[in-house]
Length: 393
Image 1: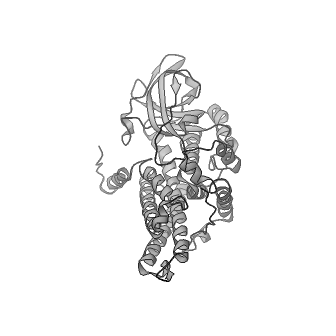
Image 2: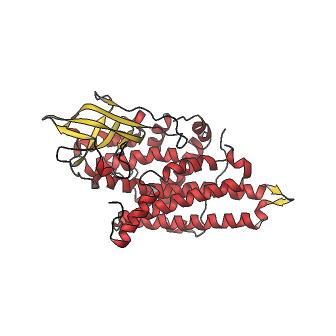
Image 3: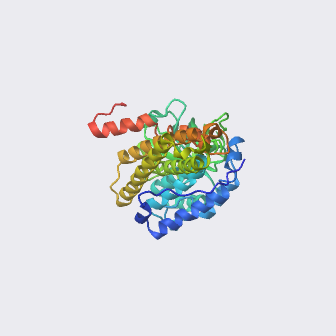
């Protein structure tokens, strides 16, 4: 099954007037990429649980990896609005495709640039930017998801190297990743970041099978059994739990934009279908309840777009907080999921088929609403911000 439907963008409040010409050009480039390289094939990839390895190199060639990484290291040197627009367009195509790019950019390239040595930046970032190599991010463990500080993966100092033991799970890209940015505790219980390379003895990355969500991306584990990691592979410029949480903030920001892309795609489908589908001798778009659904979709998309734009400006000005990002991630993913469900209802029985994208988007969003901080955890982050009382500790 292919999806060759034309997409009409959604901009009820003329938000494009807030964007620069360069930002609109970047969005257009990625929109064209999605239209050509993802949309015609995504339903087949999803149905067959297939990750197209060739997409990695194509994303690199298009400038999708590390768009706001310094140009000295192969990145795009773009602002955060541009990065958000890239994530919006990718997730309009598919959440799995956006996850691949988001992990590479926010969870692998960002910590190497922000926390790594000059040698690490020069060694890894250009190859990650070009898509020559793919990375993954190891934080979540079998017993520690929402409480990452409880991790038990450990680093032991053995003089010339560290010995790494433990495991991580629900790791996007891991089965095919060339490197993994892994977080572990040293003998002093201090969390450190370490770059683990494919092929290191004792390191394996088994694939997670049976997924009903994000089926076009690869998910797996990271297993470390006495892995000798050179000390040069430790990220030297930041440690503690704040280091991986800083990476997650970058990824959550991208998700807040990506969810808008899903919502836009579902709304566009529902609007067009409602104008074409006839019942009782007239288009179903003429019925009040259908118009109510469409009006509410447009309202929530417009609010989410403005939220993303303002959040991007706060990041670029250095005035953002983690709570700002939590609010946007939580709101926009919830909105997108509700819009996908409403759009499916407008399509009736046809909405459950892969002639249309809503069910795929719905299933994907069930992962997106859980990862990078669950829906409820982000609510508690905001509650802590409001009251000063942490409910999760």
